[in-house]
Amino acid sequence: MRGTRAPVKGSIFLSGSIPDAARWQGDFEPLEITDAVVAFARACLTREFRIVTAAHPTLAPLLMYVAAEFPSTDEARIVIYQSQLFETVLPTATRRFEADGVGELIWTEAVAGDEPTPGHWEASLREMRSRMLTETNPLAAVFIGGMEGVREEFSRFSDLFPGRPKYAVRRPGGEAAQLSLEAQRASSSVSDAENDISYPTLWNGFLRELDPDQRQ
Image (cartoon, rainbow, N blue to C red; front, side, top):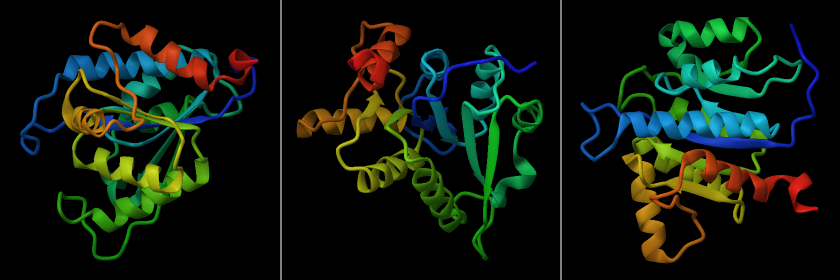
């Protein structure tokens, strides 16, 4: 049953994943990544923001599960982009939640010659990322965990939307932690989580700065 909710206040881009230990040599904590993502999703949906993300199999079903806790609406609150290159390997849970109206799945064209294996998918992912960011025009970006794709999405977001808020969370590790450390050394405007702050407190503070109702 669809409920009545306030209009969406804007989209926020989430970039991240639980890294594949076979491909990622750096430090990461899967449970910390999960906790950070779940708290982020709940904070966004409670404050009527839309989450835009790529359909990484470690995070997309998790976001859909969180969205299922909230009343469904005619306007999707979770929008997931994926290249048709990965159509045969999309998690069943992601497809099911889209069918149930929990979120929206948007497919982008695969580039000829690409394959759904590491090192052979770059052009298709560039096409997907370009469409995802230009079509949704996110107010801000959040980076949690992840591998090399997080750095690419960080660069793409920065190029398209200079000056918009970016938040790289260090504590869970992954490529986002590297981005946070680099930003600290460069004294850039990329925000980072305090080690002793809870994720719900962190995200509510971050979203409060983006919420037009809170800034009045």
